[in-house]
Image (cartoon, rainbow, N blue to C red; front, side, top):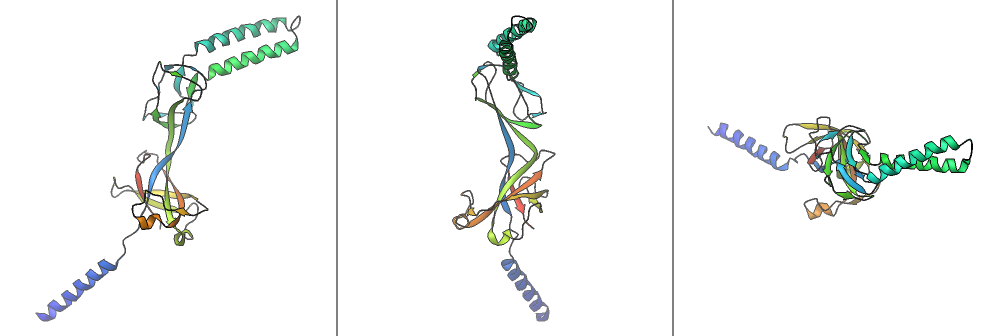
Length: 237
C-alpha cells in the first residue's frame, strides 16, 4: 500500500508546484475605437428635417440633415434671374466685369444652397445626434457624429523588451470578455516611435510608472460586433 501512496503524493506535489510556478498568459487590454467624423452646419438656419438616427447605418451621399434656408433660397432665385438677364445683355450694354460679377453671385448662391443639405461623406454608422427639428443652428454647430465601424482599432501598451518582436502588419488575435470562446483576428497598424508612461487607466501603480510603447491594432469588423468603448484583450504572439 505504501508503494502506491508515495508516487501519488510525489505526483500531486509536483503538479502543485508546476501550477504555482507556471506564468499565466499575459493579455494586453485596449479600448475599441473607430474613425469618427463630426458633421457641422455651414450656415445659420433652422433644421427642417433630421433623417439621421443614432445607431443607424448610412451610405455615402445619403441625406442626414436638411436646413430650411428660406433666405438662401430667395437669394439663389434672385441671383439666377440676374444672371439670366446678364446673358441677354452681354453682347450690348453689359461689360465683361459686370457679367463675371453676376455669374459669381449666382454660383456662390447655389453653393450655399447646397450646404443646406448635409450628406454622409462615407459609409458609416450614426453614433450621436445633437439637435432636433426646428432648432436653430449657426455655422460650426456640430450636428451629428459618424463612425466607420467596418474596421475598428485598439491601442495597447507594451514594454520595450517586447517591442523588438513586433512589426507592422503582424497578425495578432484578441478576446472579448463578453463573448468567451470567440477570437478576433487583427493586425498591427502602427507602433509609436516614442516611449510614454503607462496610461492612468492601468490598474496597478507599479504598471503605471513603467515606460511603454503604444501599439495600434486594427480589427476587421464586418459584422459590427465590436463597438467603441468595449474592452479587448489582445494576445501578442
